[in-house]
Image (cartoon, rainbow, N blue to C red; front, side, top):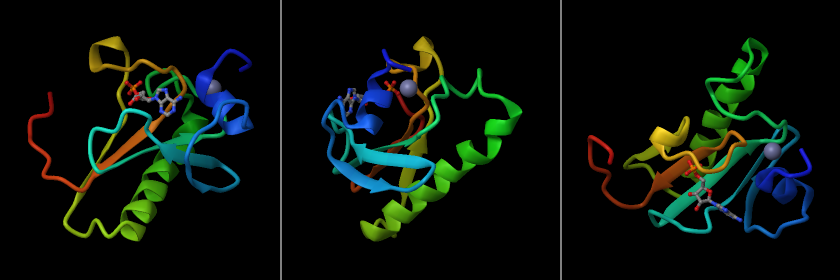
Length: 113
Ligand code: AMP
Ligand code: ZN
């Protein structure tokens, strides 16, 4: 997707602070961090969001969670962390390329805002 911000980050056309990369995913620091660790894990495939994902994307959606757990372990977040897929404008989604937020390094409240 030539007009997608996160596709441009994957392609290196927009700079980002890379945290992790493999054949299917790319992870980078959120530009407006909401916690000491705030990393976005995105599939290299352009998927808009959870609700418009295809059944064939299920493994990829779950795999992003495993990447988040790996990064959390590397960061020493043994006490806990939160992963969030915001879906749609009412949930605060502003970038329409699927991304998993990994948040940690501070106490998390529930329910979320
Ligand atoms: P969401 O609100 O769930 O769509 O999350 C989008 C996230 O992308 C927000 O937390 C933004 O701070 C983050 N973001 C937007 N532009 C960039 C960028 N160029 N580099 C890194 N993070 C970004
Ligand atoms: Zn994209």
